[in-house]
Image (cartoon, rainbow, N blue to C red; front, side, top):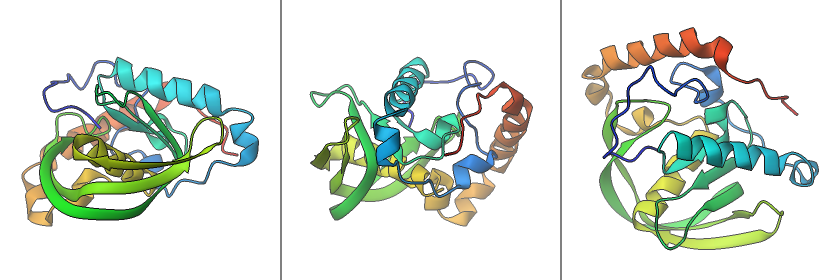
Length: 191
């Protein structure tokens, strides 16, 4: 997820981020196995965190770097600091809020999205230990946004179809950039 206050030139610094139009963004990601946790997980998490910070994001899901695994990272600059969740699952939610969201995979697009105001989520940390979190406000929104990515859902899927008509040209521009950049993206083994 991208912070709204940041403006981004679509042609700069997007080669690592998978953009709208890339099929990996529409995949339902596979769970991270115990083998992965004792193997490649640190490498993947470090790559995700670095990519999120370099692109001035506040959240990132593994498919956004081409890795179809259930991993998310988030850091909204609050006291919670960096959050890493592996195989995250929302256990329950409360309330509803509408707020504008952006996305690193949809540069330049910002849409009002309705989400739960508070969530209870569980998953694993990067050592494979169980964690449960109660989140509210912006952090809850970011985690929901990133979990959507793990199920192939983008913010454009969370708004009325008629709203998409006004951003049709922008979506096509991003799709073309995605096709142009596909040879620049690193390829990950799909285990």
